[in-house]
Length: 542
Image 1 (cartoon, rainbow, N blue to C red):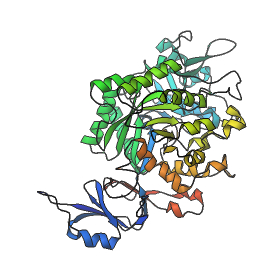
Image 2: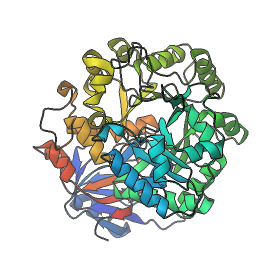
Image 3: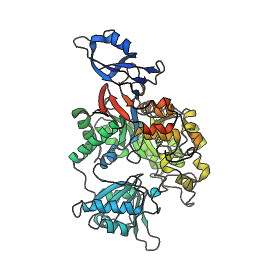
Image 4: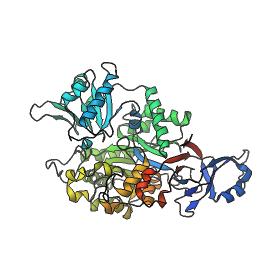
């Protein structure tokens, strides 16, 4: 077969010599793919593709017998947070309070006196002593620096006394939906800041320079491709200095510097009117960079008991969690998005938060793009039935399972834990699900998410998994990160499977995941190559 294009020399790329799982309904496995521009025009055996396209093939990507799958998508992350780890103190995985304080001291020693000490990633559930540093300990560790450290979930923070002083924060004046935690005896701040109270500090923290952000984002994008990701859905404007700067950073990196990663931007609600003014409402953009749903928070997180539940916390019977907005305000926000024909992506971890969002969505007209409920961590049978529609995506994070268990049962009790991250039940009920990391809250690596969805535990844990009947197959887990991600961005006609007319996005792996006898071998698998639009954007051996 000869490809003819009037007035142009046709240059085709052959991706060949591999075991390529297409995940389409016609050809399960092929050896070769022929690419014209960015899109697949044919696929089949090595011999047939070479015979049919012969001299028009100018570029060859040799898979060297490796296994390839459709390009992996992370449906929910904060690339700005991943980028911050290249600049700020990264406390992810720290195992004790003392280790955390030691790292703070070390970081403080490298900073000029008076400069903010910023970081994130601490998780007291990993601490041997189970307690977080006191404000006095934070003062001692960072004597000459205002300090502000985000928890792994992004919904709780630690600040020292100097930060309170610099920002002139009073615990008597806290925004709705937030809290400055006080010592029950002294009534003085403990250093722990929850939810919207963080705004009292963040508005005083000096912005990073444009060039700092750009360099860090570039490193983060390259790391994503190293992890096998071909597309990401990322939410950043509140961290990158607003919509204009966020879009400019991505535009320059993707369109000028030609970083290959495809980026779908979720935009926070405060920027909705600005999107309309600039004619960049959801759907705007191209295959490399486009605008997605309007991000809204309905509740907090389970770690600090701010996820909104329909029944109180098991270990705090007076606490139902935190509604970031009351139901009237939440309705008004989603209704406003609908006025612009925009879908919403609503952070809903607790079952009551999800119920509130579904109540609103069911009252408002649907739009052409799908809405998302992000996380949907704690469900109920009635909510599962209400989520069964093709206009709604459950944007789920499998790595939350090994991170949140076993302590989650202490928070919400055994009965509700049966409906914590019930992925098998969701898929069996026809709920559209997309897999993501919520990085930097969980690691970027999609293979870790696939492993978590399949095993529901860490490799070193010797049991059958947390709520084992909710395990899904390796194929189903891969589909969360392929066609699931494509559904979430309304791009299932051009992404998510390998077939004619779709982008030539592939993730090439050292192991054939679909033939593994032990799912723990997923963690022994390495990304050999990442191909986006028929071009290698990462190769392990270069």
